[in-house]
Amino acid sequence: MQQGDYQLTNKIKCPDGFRSFEEALSFLYKSIDYEKLISYQYNAATFNLDRMLKMLEYAGSPHKDIPCIHITGTKGKGSTAIMLATILENSGLKTGLFTSPHLVDLEERIQINRQNISGGDFIDALNALKSYIQSLRDTDLSASPTFFEILTSVCMLYFKRKQVDMAVFEVGLGGRLDSTNVVLPQVSVITNVGLEHTAILGNTLAAVAYEKAGIIKQAVPVVSAVEDPDTLSVIENICKEKHARLYLLGRDILVESVKSSNKNDTIGLLCKIKTWRHTYDNIFLPLIGTHQAKNCALALGALEIMRESGCISIDDATIRHALSTLRCPARVEIISKKPAIIIDCAHTVDSMRFLRNAIIENFKYDNLILVLGFSQDKDLENILKEIVVCGNTIILTKSKSPRAAEPEDLNQKTERLFNKRSRVIHNVTDAVVYAKQIATRDDLICITGSSYVAGEALQILKTRNAQLLQRPL
Image 1 (tube, rainbow, N blue to C red):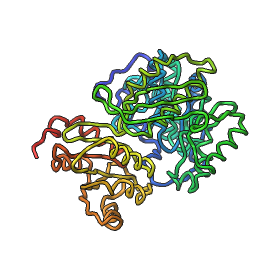
Image 2 (image 1 turned 180 degrees about the vertical axis):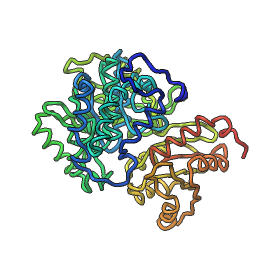
Image 3 (image 1 turned 45 degrees about the vertical axis):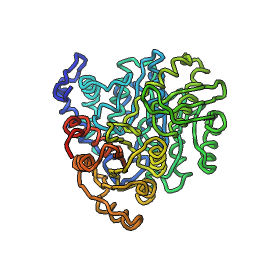
Image 4 (image 1 turned 90 degrees about the vertical axis):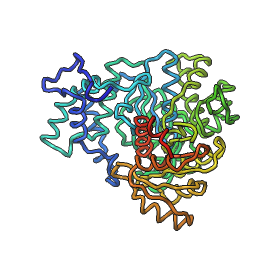
């Protein structure tokens, strides 16, 4: 369905409400969007939970009526969130999922039972907030809510109206001051802590851990895969202060075995995961990369807590089936074969290392063609070190994001660090087309570096798939 085809529902109460999805988006995008800014002040004035709570109060405080799981972490939180939502849905629960950023369409961020919010429902929810937002814009622009705050509120209002049984909320940035941090979850998940957004969250692991641990609530259990001693100390201390029991991967939850597998012509993982109350043998994940076993273990740990508390009832067969049907876009996602094209949203040093290992362990190819594009605020040299060394051909590009790094700057780094010459192509469309033109049937094309590059590539390959993938060399 095209954006202009959305139909309004009869729930609209605002007399001057939005009459099209485009009009609603235009209103939303007039708010400050920190996802598009390279640097900004990260404090309680910029990210104001009181501002968020006042907007939700205007909407009837929908967040108070949504049973949920809250997830943060430097990497893996999106995959873990999708795993949890998929299992909960398969158990018969009407399950909400809020993630960010989106890859292709904004509506991807807000889902019920893995279906994007419709244009009509989006308009309905935003209409309910429109007068409040506009009044602040007219009287005190500095007090008006941000893009992400509005989107989070739309999501919570939508989930409340649709009466979801359970929701999974992924933090947008950090945790402590994130607009999702108004919820009172059944369990909090901190996947891990790494040095990302250091100009915003702090330049030490302990500082970043403090921000992530901000989602820990009084007496709410926590599941985490954190390993670094300094990081773990921060989380343990806050858990102690909040009387929140901490379940750790490697102590309470174990990945006892994980290996690459192939089921019904689908590449994936076969895992054995043990929690403090159960052992899950032969779990098949249709995902590439052994790191996904850790994300699965965290998801199972969170579910165990909820099963123990009696707030959900799920049998093992349902869990196995749900995990075997996972869809995680842009996580070493195979788009086509002959030549193989994979897309991944890796954008940190660790995630790029995981991607490199996944390629080495799961793919055979004559040449590896890398299409790379990054955001400026990343650890570019160390990220490049993880992936460039295994590429035969390197194509450097940039997404449409205002934060995108210039490919010429990336080219200078690759020449200086690796003595490798790259081809610079200034937009993702042309970069993908060129990669396909030079690839032979037995080559591998890997498109990665940011969610923005991954999203643009997905859109190109889906909308132009027939002509692009069959284009003569």
